[in-house]
Length: 72
Image (cartoon, rainbow, N blue to C red; front, side, top):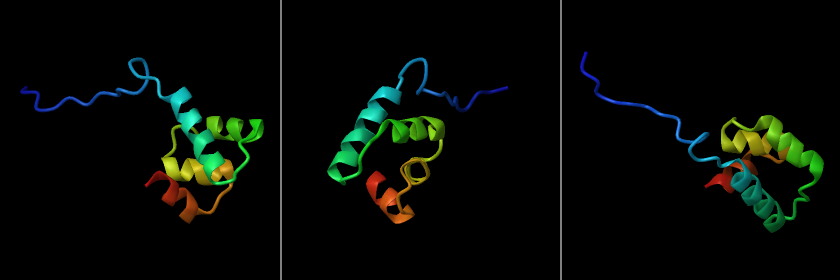
């Protein structure tokens, strides 16, 4: 069998983006006047792994359009 491609999951053991992701979400919240409380941080952690806009929409309880705009 000839291998034509290899797919790997770079984010995880090699590159952990979790802490940096939380830091950036905190900055985005500050820029948009959203208080980033402990409860919202926990909600982000519970929804981590979902697509970015959906995670922000569910965890921060912001409108879908605002969540989509924040990831663009």
